[in-house]
Length: 277
Image (cartoon, rainbow, N blue to C red):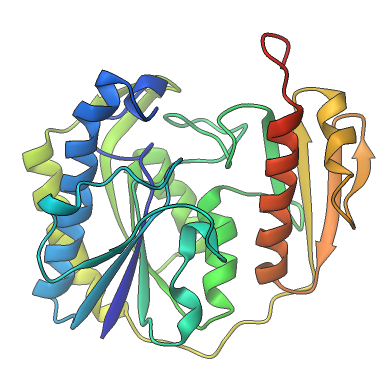
């Protein structure tokens, strides 16, 4: 049994504001340890539950945040950027039985600690076939095309609510409770590590590959905080204006859809100007 962990940081224990997740800041250095604790707890729990192999895919920012030397020696980790499937890299090889979304968060335009979708700002909403989409929902569509179930989700309490929409069978762990986008009631790392380990052990029973789900074609719509960003996004082939600050595109699969999404966010990031956005 092989488990893949997609590890994001905004939903990690103790994380509540931008400096906690911005590489290079003192707060980021401090929070890296708590992020690593969450991920390692999931690794331990999956092995407790009978997993033979656990692969971690770094999914936050530079994708070089976790402390490899603090992880269980049985685990392996994909670290660094520029990967075919970005946040769920590794799922495409046909040998993964279940995936965990550890340290996830709610989507742009929603309530939740550090809520966003791919870009910290600029994007104010994402929808897939009319349903507001978080990174969790987008990635769940991708992994479904490989027959891999989402078995565990950790983050704030609203992330757990969000997960019920795209992975209703998954075990969830709230490591903190939302107060505002930049505030939360946080549990200690010792407590969240125990909770995540127990949940991962339980979730291992859900790690059963199923037939690939072909849910397309998909219509993906993005809303930005400025009209010029929508204009810039149309540089990507197939992306068209759907409103003053919105663009939309269609894809036959979410494999294609998530790659187009990455292209759009890369182009839009380059179009953001200092101060005015």
